[in-house]
Image 1 (tube, helix red, strand yellow):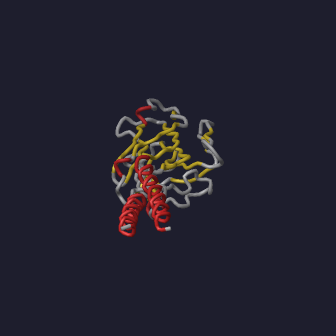
Image 2 (cartoon, helix red, strand yellow):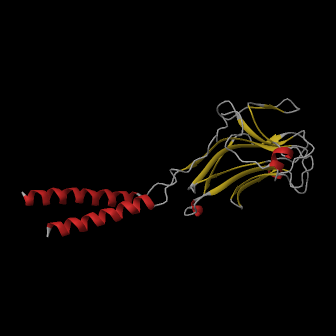
Image 3 (cartoon, one colour):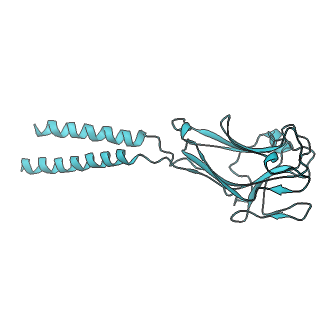
Length: 226
């Protein structure tokens, strides 16, 4: 009798443990070198064409032709996508990306800049998850002149909970002109990070409670046998 009850309790606890471990945890989800403190684009992906023709780099500061200097939001380095001097400044080439486990949210600091505004099509900064655009900012929102304009360092937090359940996601950052003409536009990036998906508290409480009952049941059975 005791052996049968103990077997049932063991099975229940086993199922609970399987649920806890199978529940999608994005504690494994992470962005490597999201603060760019390696001083380069280590861990960020770029294909050959992007590397040859695109404008993406890690720098410790940048000074524009009008003397304005931009420093990292934190630490010693930041990423810069786009250019104010290159003859080619195509957004799809000014791109960095990284693949990670699905997660609930993405956060980052950005400083979008532009000058010599063009009416159409406006240059922009965009964030994509897989092939979906999840954030964008156009030069038309800040720049209506030939002077340098920027957002300043701005914090963004994006809800990515719709992607929970997928094995992995690819997060891309792009900035520049849609067609690649010399439209001086770009973005500085810093402190890119993702957040873990916690197991709901109710599941933890239920699981730990059942494990506690198993321990009490084992103790009771042990006393009864003696």
